[in-house]
Length: 352
Image (cartoon, rainbow, N blue to C red; front, side):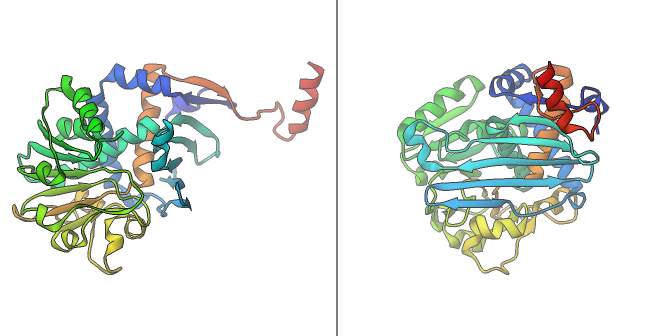
């Protein structure tokens, strides 16, 4: 527990708005934030057994999903509320929005309430690049980025910051999305090519990132598109009935996942038998298992996002607030003079 977080009125909770989050990220620098988040996530993966772990609680509808993602390390508790509604973009809304809470386990008091739409995009990209440091071929500098929606620029910058990727091959079924992505990234020193198809995008790429949004069993990559030695960062499949890769690719690859009970329901491996072997990424990070074991091996990070990554992001943010001051204070918790006299607060408010 950071003593500074508790050294204030008990009824005050720090709140980070979208505006404050943007100012904080720009003050630090996007690539530095991604590197810092990756370091925090990697550190928490090394102590994976310390955390409570449960598959996220999901409420599915025909148009999307609303999820709660909780975890605790025994000292602090965190949860994230997040939705996924691909059709939202038709109405000018985000596909994914989120907010999160960090709380003190000893008292149960929340310490921090924050937007997590931007923070989730950052932590997802940071996790992808952190995993790739353990799994991608050495010296990889070219990435195919298939699906150029809201997550694409974050993924590109994370792979630049952590792996030195400088060449991007973009494809999206909406050509304007690729054009926007290229335009947003032009100041960051990438060599960018917009490709006419997914097949064209993967040519010459050592890393393939798929990050599409449709809630469907799609085939973004077919088996013949993936050659030896490639690392696949599969980000888009994150709920039942939503996949991006042909199952034959999975059967050829070494598969690495966050939390198998969740990934087998939501990830690419929902297409495989329940006993198909996978490796938990934390074991690789902690040195208990091997990542890439052969230059010609196909490695696949079947990423669905897990609550410990959100815990890491919230913990990182809490540590930045004292330095940045990028927060407001919310009068969120009732704090009567006598903890047993909650009703008396109402009476005193009436008298005042």
